[in-house]
Length: 409
Image 1 (tube, helix red, strand yellow):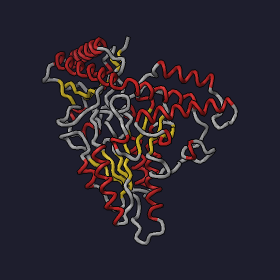
Image 2 (cartoon, one colour):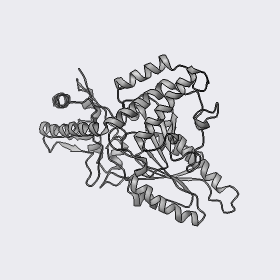
Image 3 (cartoon, rainbow, N blue to C red):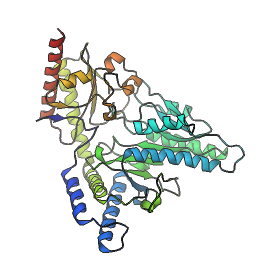
Image 4 (cartoon, one colour):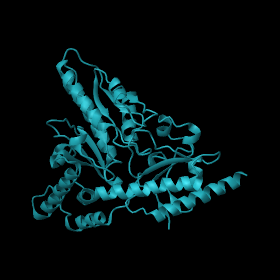
């Protein structure tokens, strides 16, 4: 039996979620826009899933819009912020030019790549703020220092998928709110605040009231749900702008048209319910198993040979993530994993798995030396991971490293 320690890449469907998807496929197949009983049943299921997601985040059901996944939700926020910037400039003599966005150098590709593309097309400018090598965080002072008169959005992930470092989103929101009051008096555009919470949901408390953000991205497959997502928007269309990227049949209050994917939405609602009921137990279990994993790595390889790339002084990290390097020549992460017989894990973000032996840009931007970063492995434990799984995985790593060293000798 293989040991799967790649829960930051994706998670298996929880049995209750698979059941909810199946039940909706069989029993709620009607078009949610139809007024007959088959349609009403589907519509009710969607409404109840919306309530479950809102409860999970401490928001209101009307603040949730379902999307195809995190990538669409992130793109929608960027699209909205730029559109809102232009609308706020409309009819003013002293236009601020093109929109400017502030983000970090360690965001997911679904933030970085659309911003780079818009830069190439001359549609927006972006400042990518490096993370501090001390904390692994994008520091709030650095993010604020990047703000310009034409800034319309600051986007900062809630927790990094590779290092597990939790970002200072609460402080960022508070300070942008204060800044927005001063900007309004000066006639400058409002700065919207977005966080991609893909990695945090199901592993720690996520409360939109506490976070104070305008937008928050939800990704089902990171918390044992199906491969769809949702976007939280603080009062969409009234307190916070939201502009559709698609036009069609008016579903999701015209924000995201297209006949709703009832079974997947029902599954997402069920995954949210499991988080609502159990998140504290999930977090405590994963933290215990992850701490045991780190102790076993040090015990098996010796403290001198293990470098934890996810430990930063003064920063909190996800309860389930262990990013480490086994020091030594020829022990690149990819080579070590290729020699493992039991362990299933990755060297970093799943989206970058075809990048060869180049060290992770995220680790490099955290100030980790290239020769350490290229040996990095990211192990992420899950709800079902046991200490026995950890023992087998570590034993497998030991045999892989011994094999590689024999081959080199």
